[in-house]
Length: 130
Image (cartoon, rainbow, N blue to C red; front, side):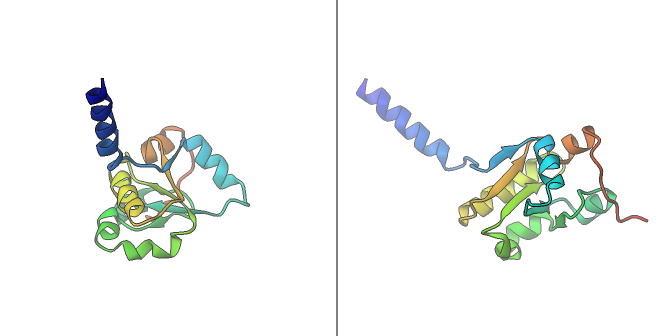
């Protein structure tokens, strides 16, 4: 019994190292938050520049995930702000979230479904391809 408790404790300890603790929002919660003018959110789109140009959330900042992973200081000015991090499906955003949390970022919001869910919900996007 004591051995089992120890095993569970170690399992929880080990699994906790890779856990993302960011708050998880739906695209509906994000869209509602964006509509509220008092919300001071940093919208960080970590897709490639061409993906961003094809359609992005209004007022989003585009810094590709590989650039942030190489130089996290690119977003250091947002460390104490509420930052929403997203990509196309969530894979790249999760890598960035994990890296930034390891550097002490605490006010991170992860979007369930990322841009795929945003587009599926038919929320508006801006393009840079005119």
